Image (cartoon, rainbow, N blue to C red; front, top):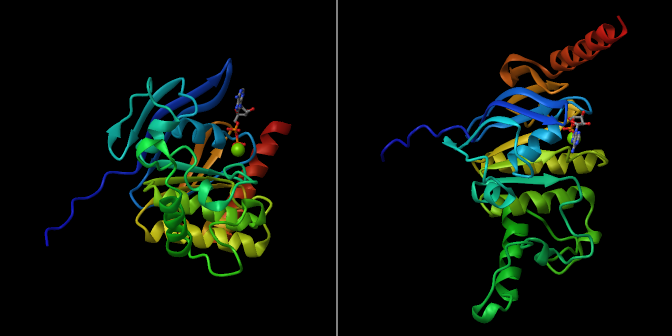
Length: 262
Ligand SMILES: Nc1ncnc2c1ncn2[C@@H]1O[C@H](COP(=O)(O)OP(=O)(O)O)[C@@H](O)[C@H]1O
Ligand SMILES: [Mg+2]
């Protein structure tokens, strides 16, 4: 069998800047996420993490800079949420990405409904696929949850699982998780981390945003620290232990505080 060529990185941001009026939320960001790489993106509130996600997912354009997805330059003038999906970028917002009152199977197809000729919804097909995602992609087992269950019956971690499963099914190459473990119990956090393992196993890439490092240490290949709109550190996991990383973050935040008090 021929050796497959080296795959381009999933994502590359070059000198990306974002201003809101005169406020600079992102300052010359250069970030690369490798093919099948899991990047833990860390930083305090206001660091610019969510702004970055919104640019990547086509919610709004950057003020300047370039974006490459799977090695191809994106035309930022026409880039939007739909195009981001078409490029294989999906995001999973905390809780808000799933309609509470909806039944699960419908939830998998929001904005991408499958239709029969004459425009009728293909309910049977949608249910079949939803079940396949639940059982095989995310490995839901028993506990009385079926494709007909309401989303409100699911725990926080299970909801994250559904959202991640959906992103994986639609063949996202890069899945962005913006603080998915906030407000989850320890057991639930473990579930979400297990889903991230599945992303890795499926050959996809992921940006996992958090400000709790202990959460993502295990699942990440690399850590990127943001502070006030800038990337201030980029460290491969093989080069740092969790303890050293924790100490580094603590020292870093103290250093910043000292500077502010001076
Ligand atoms: N729509 C917006 N309008 C104006 N300022 C914004 C907007 N969104 C974010 N900001 C500002 O940009 C900075 C980064 O915010 P954000 O990306 O949400 O940070 P994080 O997700 O790391 O907490 C903050 O100073 C925030 O107030
Ligand atoms: Mg945020």
